Length: 211
Ligand code: B1M
Image (cartoon, rainbow, N blue to C red):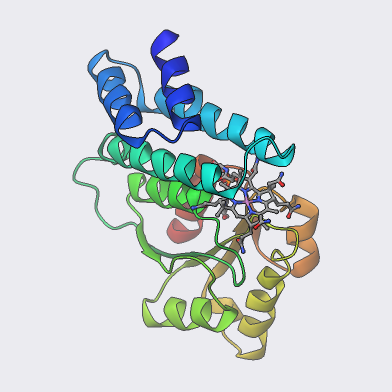
């Protein structure tokens, strides 16, 4: 669809106001938030990712695209949130230590809030200690760790190990995700659940909080 193609292109060009304008127009046209997210915003981010990999674009271009992505996604947030949602449980979420990628994490947050969960978003570059402290402080049922780098995904094991060594492993579930993370990795480090995308992560967290 032309408007979604234009949105993808504007995102790749890092044109934040244009992306915001097109998201607004797409909503006015009655397109679903899911379609706008997947076929407009995530499509553009995917193309930028491929170009980044091939050295066709560099960090500054990716950063402005990321800013446009986050701005567009923020406009979709109210439409992805259940009306009058009651708190169905608390999740502590963050990107692990050494890792600054937050677009996927922000989508996970949005989807979780959309399912009525309260999300304590710790941000990026979060050490294992902080995840555990926050989970205890907020009486969370789930800790959710995101990592985008093969060099940082091992930090997730530190979260699991620390919970074990502090004797608090039974107090909450630990979920992991992000592009390099797999089901096998999740099992190997002793985490409770791997999910590949934000919507499935929200579904799984809700299940944990309600069980
Ligand atoms: Co970075 N980067 N980056 N980067 N970056 C990748 C990840 C990379 C694959 C690009 C590449 O070379 N092909 C590569 C990693 C290679 C590797 O480790 N094997 C890479 C690299 C190398 C780097 C730097 C080292 C580059 C450098 O400086 N030389 C550097 C590292 C900085 C650091 O973190 N310390 C770096 C920097 C950056 C920017 C700052 C420029 C920017 C981040 C901006 C930001 O996030 N605010 C950036 C970006 C944008 C990317 C790419 C292009 C896009 C990532 C993204 O946002 N995708 C990425 C290439 C790519 O992925 N194709 C790349 C969209 C997002 C929606 O997907 O985050 O996967 P994702 O989230 C998904 C799922 O994974 C899942 O839900 C989301 C969708 O539903 N999910 C979860 C995510 N977290 C979850 C948690 C869960 C469950 C599901 O918990 C249960």
